[in-house]
Image (tube, rainbow, N blue to C red; front, side, top):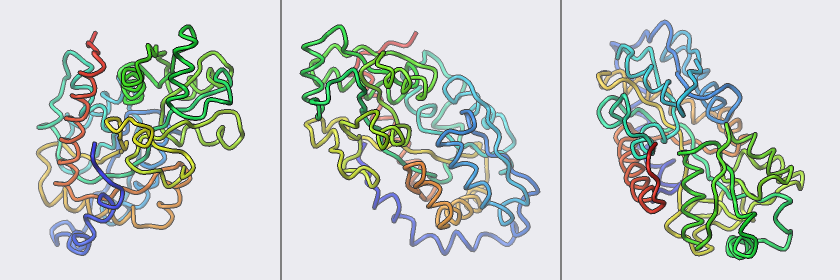
Amino acid sequence: MRITRRHLVQSTAAALAFGALGNPGWAQGLDTTRVIIGFAPGGTIDLAGRRIADRLQPAYAKAAIVENKTGAGGQIAVQTVRAAAADGATVLLTPTSPLSLHLYTYKKLSYDPAHDFAPVSGAAMFDYALAVGPMVPASVKTVPEFAAWCKAHPDLANFGSAGSGSAAHFIGAALGRASGVDLRHVAFRGSQPALADMIGGQIGAVVGPVGEFMPNVKAGKIRLLATSGRKRGKFTPETPTLSEQGFKELAYVGWFGFFLPAKASPEVVQKLNAGIRGALASQEVIDSLAGAYMEPLPTAPAELGAMLKAETEFWAGLVKTVGFTPD
């Protein structure tokens, strides 16, 4: 997926002044808005949602609350917003998977990502990483060396992720395919259980968001072999990318975005967009995101729609390459 941090962060700068003006008819804002997130409290997307929601008050809404509607890899939250009134009082904050990847990993969805939602703005972006634990010898420092080790120890050639059908699952599976390794996937119910088994020596590697790994990287318990961005990450300058190590087709930047029900008016979309971009310009929010190894991702609505389209095309090709068949 060919997106760069500079393009994503700077592309809406010219529109910021216009968005901040809003529309006189919306000057009073809403009484309450709900930000719906499809994952449990405490994770990176939850942190981003709560920090941004705090900054939507009072210009967009007098009160902004976060509701965690977990289940089905984020689809419960998506369905909740799809069924809500399009008055701006119910907002979806989601990773891209339920609106792109799940088209190819589920036989049928109860919503149409392309037509049931109005893109508003990006929220945050982050790299994925391949991490290894004590099962893998310290002499293994690169992805090609990890592939060679896996070929020499096929019974240990595995990796964990936060779940079957997740973005991390397909990045790892595609990496195995590109390396010529039968790299078996082990699905966990979240990144933290996978990380615990890697640290404990039950599995050799895990693929997941960079922020999930960094406390244990700093503690010397695990090592990063590669990150997924097209360039080395802001928070991991010492770690080479997959592209640098010969896997250019796996260059990928993860992101979260805000969406409204499809029938939301342009006025409501623009007002929320201005509120989100204002929040993302706050140093407090920038610092909070950095603490979780994420960067702000302000976009115009049309740009977010184009990003989702590109994301969908990226996953279509990668899922086909891996050969995954929905259950």
